[in-house]
Length: 326
Ligand code: 13P
Ligand code: SF4
Image 1 (cartoon, rainbow, N blue to C red):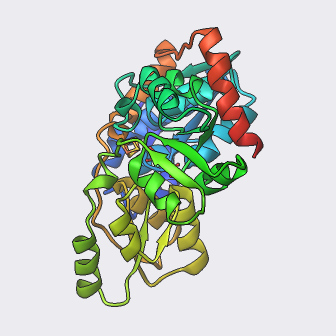
Image 2: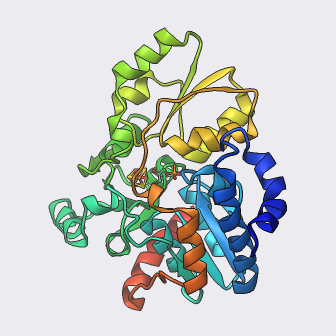
């Protein structure tokens, strides 16, 4: 494929992202984007991309974008034969759990998550032994092994609803300690937490939020619930990545800060050019492993295919489907 043709064909896409991608970088992206769009057609593939993907992925090759809950729901509805998950490994596993008959590809097998690696299936069994009869609610940011030991999953968008749906006075909530504490502050259900943290969100501090308010009077501060509780207390609004994006669209704050991963502000700003984004942010090294060349290679070579032992998958699927049914 000639570079000039690729540039010509992708020109309308560049118009979409020109506020966040300098013109000098575009020719490098254009070739991969053009190839990926053709490969999607020939492979009958869809690309599901998390809100933390970089703008050239999020706005130029993804078919479906969203937070973890939206990606899980959309994975179930996908009618293509191949799903490429532009996100981290637990997201690809969740897509495979919900689509056992489809080919699910992750462009980089090393795209992990500090929350998912903070807990094992044996840890969940120990928690159950320690707290007999208490149901286990597991954040989707977890491995299929851990989901298989759980009663139900949750995401940052539905955690309170899921916790309260069980009708018990106590739940075990794994593995994100801060999400558990932030939900505990909003419900009467007693929550037993695990000490896992997101390496991106745990780094924000309350002092940083106060400094932002001093430096940018009137700024609106949105925080992800994986942030520590003292940060959440200082923020104006807390929600999942899609909740934050919807808030910006709905409220159109003059100036906003998103206390989350760096690509979020880029992606949301493309759709809301009138909003001024102040950009303190933290990069997720796992999400950033997913790049256009790796997505292209993934579709060319049909790697890396996500596989889960069928017996384990059946148990893990139950926890995810139970969440989707609430
Ligand atoms: P959500 O997009 O579900 O809010 O999750 C954020 C996150 O950290 C995913 O890795
Ligand atoms: Fe995991 Fe945090 Fe990265 Fe999301 S942002 S993948 S929770 S480490």
